Image (tube, rainbow, N blue to C red):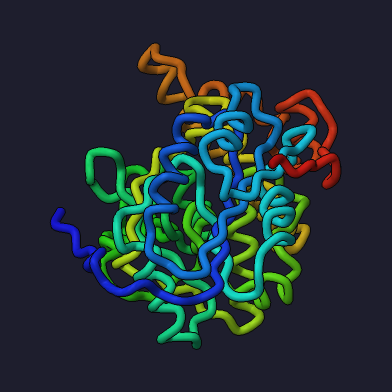
Length: 335
């Protein structure tokens, strides 16, 4: 795929701009991410990192290599939503960018994102394009909203059989390659730009979520308040998806817990109950296929552990991590 990236030799963009990064046991990736962020030409750039009690030396490495970065170290893993809110509380007035630690910002991308926001303030919530490490498109920078139809397609396997179908896989947004400006239902938290004022007015991220699903709920809340989430194709990052959670069954259990929480928080009680049954049905179908092939794997674990995730957070956190929901304190500044 041919990339169209803006000229990195352009004049610096002047704006108050805070980049918030939440790290958890991603030392190497976080260092590479921060290197790419600090190479940008934005006057007024500030970087805040919240380290979620990493045990791989992340905090020490960040403090040593990036003295210009504001580093906040949590006493325990706060999860994504709480850590983002902690970082946002340190942001200067202006714009706030949420950026995953397992990302590399391509030259000119943050400038393009900020310039678009300054020229088109009517959207108020902005995302970009994500690529895999081989340069191919990773469509996960944005999604369609979950619905009973999309969950039915998931439960029956239609979303897998007709992948990227606008009808049978609607949350994928079809085959659109993210290379045009387009409003979308959900912008993911790996690359999300919003004004600090709007972020605060919306009440920040919903701290009932621990990991996954909070960006969908945030986008829904933003849209209901008049914001128009939009994709800016010239803002491009490389994303090593799941860098802090690994992959396979454990990660997918977290994803399912986030989906269940989203349904319980945003849908009616009856509708959410149906949605969670559909989530379980979809995991059963995929688990059955794995076992029929005598290759039990991710979905077999997800189905086996459905009791751990189907109630959503905070119960899922206690069951998946064997500990209670963390409190939003115990954060210290380093340096």
